[in-house]
Picture 1: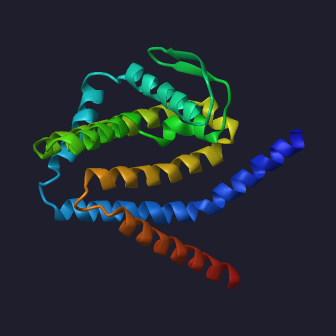
Picture 2: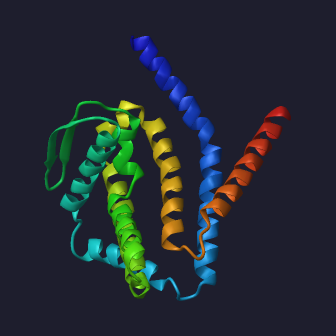
Length: 228
């Protein structure tokens, strides 16, 4: 049994290692597209950047809203569990830590809080939902501000949490978990960007360019290996 577990961990680490070039290529594509788009848009999306800056200042000057983060963290576990068919047996939120006990577990449930910025997703969902029933374009700048603020909140506090030893990451292997977190975050942030900047970020275009860059980098590596 121990041999099988160690073998699975080894195979996951190999798979994660082989994914690194793809993650670099996809991340490069997203960042390049995003920076080019926002730079060419001028001040149109300035409220997004103001939102990011405001959270950074808020955390440095005032405090880290850890209880709010912990609630979102545990709620992400719970929602992922419910979507996976699990039942919630216990849900606890404290000032610095919390916990949720579910009837089943998998990688999706375990790493969900690191995959999904739950407050940003809620903001996007509410705005899109309201947009179906009313014209809310006049609130678009506030919408971008909240997206920037919540993304900054998610990234800053997730990095803080990951800097501390996390039992979640050990379940499927720390190295594999970090690679999975990076990969899924790129996909999630691409999706969020397509909803936030509907006139500038085309998810299909980003995916096609990412796919092309991924093929190029693996082709380059493959050619290099053959020449050794």
